[in-house]
Amino acid sequence: MSYIFETERLIIQSSDMSLPEKVLDYYTRNREFFDKYEPVHIDAYYTLPFQTKSMELEVQQMEKITSAYYYFSLKEDPDTIIGSISYVRIRKEPYASVIFGYNLDEKMQGHGYCTEACRATTEHVLSIAHIHRIESRVLTTNEKSVHVLERLGFFHEGFEKASILIGGEFRDHLRYAYINENY
Image (cartoon, rainbow, N blue to C red; front, side, top):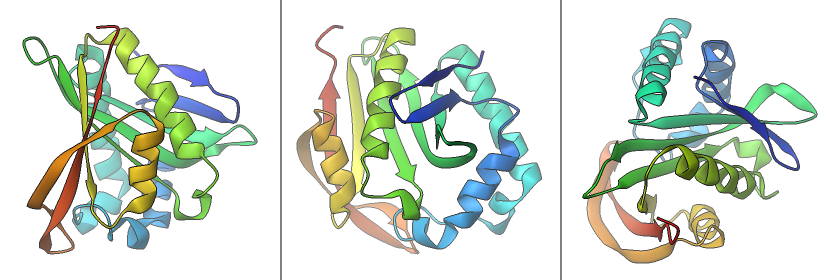
């Protein structure tokens, strides 16, 4: 099942087999920029067969509600993806939790698009999955991402020393969480 919904400025779509070419374009355009903040991807990641297979898996996970992935575009340019959001490892009670991540096209930063999309997808994922706690990790140097989390109502929980491999080295991260008060 694929979901499409809109915010004031954005069109947001969950994983769908119509998206692999657009997703490939998005990640290829931002490859160098994302390499600063995300785990390094193998070269095959930047191919249509890889993105098609990834999308198939995302669709399956969305159907089972074990993970949820969303892609968003500006209303005035619906064919160009400018961001992606993931809710991975949706766990049932007693945990009732999920890990949350997002990224935004380098050229689209500073306009509130990521916050707008993350707010809408959080509401959506909470409506389809029984989640009490949303967790997120962010590089200690990524102030823009910290601000997104804080605007969304996440609170700082702690510091993780050398926690995720980024650019060939384990980098320090801040841990944030959001508690669903309507659980």
